[in-house]
Structures are given as structure tokens and as C-alpha cells.
Amino acid sequence: MDNTAIFSCSVGTTDATAALGMEIWLDQEQIFNLGHVKEMIEFTHKFSTATADHELRFVMKNKTVEHTRVDQVNNIVHNACLTISNIAFEEIKLGHMVIEQAAYTHDFNGTGPKTKDKFFGEMGCNGTVSLKFTTPIYLWLLENM
Image 1 (cartoon, rainbow, N blue to C red):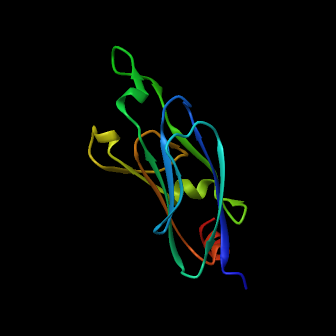
Image 2: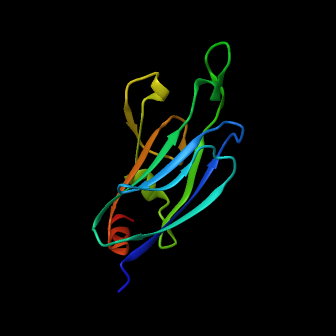
């Protein structure tokens, strides 16, 4: 029996000129690190399922106040964000499970208190999206879909 599984996702940006960076961590291992996401990236990673409990983390970095433009009354008119889509294990897309299971922790780029939100596919603040899961992956998928 193969003790591995495959994780995949797409990472993109809403503003290629903004030097927003992305790290992806699986448990304690950094599996992806890019200082400036300029285009859609299709990422795949094979990992060991020898342990049962896992945590997948997406970390957005490098966002500054200059990456958000507001009008005279502080309405946001442009906001550079990173997008994470097509999150899948073994080519099975998680879809709505990500909204139900993932948590997005951030502090509004230092302008507010630390908060934990649901994740809807877009990161607009430096912070971390965390998704905990267990292996065997098919059993976790069945229990949570």
C-alpha cells in the first residue's frame, strides 16, 4: 500500500504589479515559497500519510498599505489580493469543504486586532489560512463532504 497522497491547488493574484508573496506549509515543512505571485500557478505536492493528523497552511506575506487604494471617504477602490482555488487531494476538489473547514487568521495588516474568519478563496491581508485534515485522505473526505 502506498503511504502517500497528492495535494494540489492554484495560486493567483488580483494585481500582478503588487509584490504579494505566498508560502504553503504542510505540517512543519514549507512546500512552496514565492516572494511575488505574478500569475496563476498550478501547484502539486506529494506527501507522506504515515501520520494521521495534518495541517495545511497558506501564508500571505509582503502586503503593504500601498497595495490598497481608497477614495475620499475611505471606500476601498482597489485591493491587491491573492487567490487560492482548486484545492484538492488526490484530484478531488474540496470546494465548499474549504469554506466549512478552513480558518483565515490575520490582523488587518497591523491595523486591527487579530481575527479569525472563514476563508472564501481570497486573501486580502497578510495572514494564514489553516486547514486541518487527517489521513487516510479518502476517509477524511467521506466524513466531511
